[in-house]
Amino acid sequence: MDIVNQLVANGQFRVLKVPLGFIKALEWVFAIFAFSTCGSYDGSFRMSVSCKENVEESDLKIDVDFEYPFRLHQVYFDAPSCKGRTERFFLIGDYSSSAEFFVTIAVFAFLYSMAALSIYIFAFEKYRENNKGPLIDFGVTCVFAFMWLVSSCAWAKGLSDVKTATDPDKVLEQVPACDEDAGNKCKEVYDPRMSGLNTSVAFGFLNLILWLGNIWFVFKETGIAAPFMRAPPAQEKQPAPDTFGQPGYGQEQQYSQQQQGYQPEYGQQGGGYNQGGEYGQQAGYAQQGAPTSFSNQM
Image 1 (cartoon, rainbow, N blue to C red):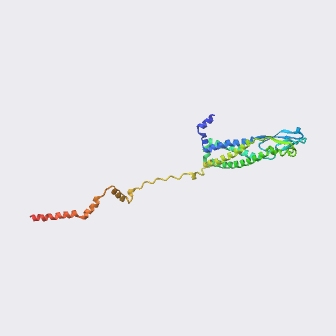
Image 2: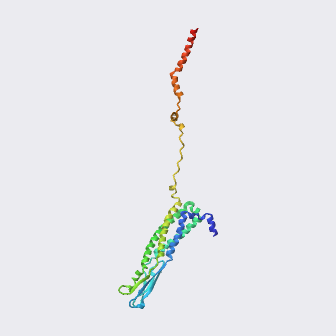
Image 3: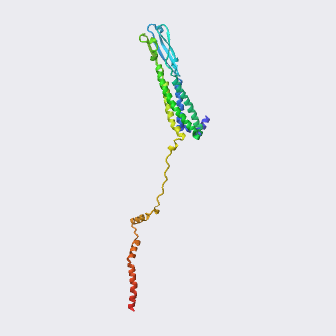
């Protein structure tokens, strides 16, 4: 308990909070349910045969037991022939291949999920080192996803055949004493319970969904998609244009000054003033008139 508390304090279990570790933990749990519900199954059904003439030969409790791996051709039962003897009959079919294949995939998926979780928790940095760990994990995850698809479909078909082979009405058709012409009464007492096997098929397809979904999260750890997922580089802001260096600054400044009511009267009128020459003419007139007036006075 102290070791677990220390690992929690050091943040070793933080990987279980991300989809990569959380889905792997679900795969581990669902694999347990898949192989346990199928591999530990045992069922039975009961039939009754009532003879019309030889009533003492009747058997109202014919129990037939079967279990994993469903080699039904090895399962037998004894039923009266209503002719003074008892006959032995066997069920039909061998469905062990699909059932054992499903359980084998579930067991290996359980072992791999447990090993992967241990690496995630205790050696996640080494898992990412040189990118070898994610690549191996990605390949194995793809293989298991495909195997879950094949095994689940095969076991679903096998379960359908098991239900047909263990149907009491179908089994009674093998007993000659149950022919309609014989007049004997043959019926089923109860059917086998298949809820556990139905659950195993459901867990098989749930595992398929989990492993398919986990492919994406393991693929992200490989770094293969990193160059395609990078955001485009941010554009640098261009500096504001230096209007003082533009050739139109003088025109813009003059236009702004005119808008403000400022007019360079001296520059414009001064040029006209110099061109007019009024001041120069008056000055010359004064200079020429002064000596004339002085000589007259003399």
